[in-house]
Amino acid sequence: MTQFYFLSILFNIIAGLILVYGENFCADINSTEVSTATDEKADAFEDKAKKENAFIKKANIEAISKKFDNLNNEILRLVTGILCVFVGLMKLLSVYRNDIPVIGDLVPVIAGFAGGASLLLEYFIIHSTTNIELTDNVKKVFIDSRKYIGLFCLLAGILHFIFPQVILL
Image 1: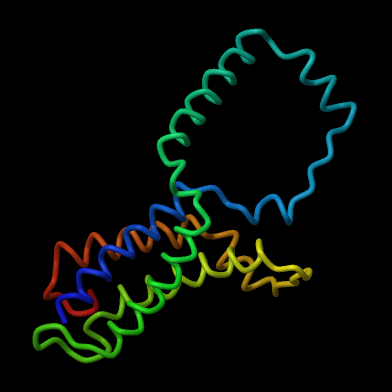
Image 2 (image 1 turned 90 degrees about the horizontal axis):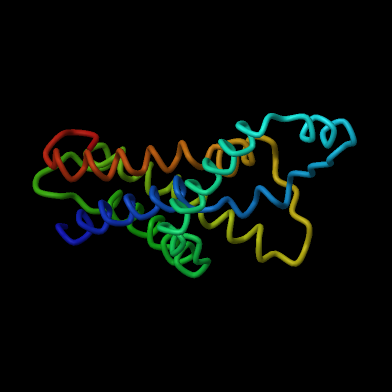
């Protein structure tokens, strides 16, 4: 169906943008950074030019992140994750214009499932009241590699839009 074709493109691109440019909320939960006295001494001896350069880079990153601040909305992430998985499932079950069933839209379906799973898993980890222990493989794929999943979703959405009749796209 044409509607699911459009929704697949739309939600793959939105999920890709969230995963690439949005903040990783799970990074704060699992990482522990401890500053030592040697780090403070090393920072004290830096050149003034290096400090100014780092300040300029930080200001540029903050300016860019303000443009994508709406991508950090938790409700948007939850709804996008649910809809990515739903549209991926519907694309798997429906066929678009004499396309091959299941194989015809395999890449957008996989991208939708991966992007939606990453967003939903992140939401579940943040809002869970119990301590969640993920396996290393699940954490490595869906949490640590979220930018790669986002790039895959963006690429799948754009290619799915440009080449509608190509098998696997």
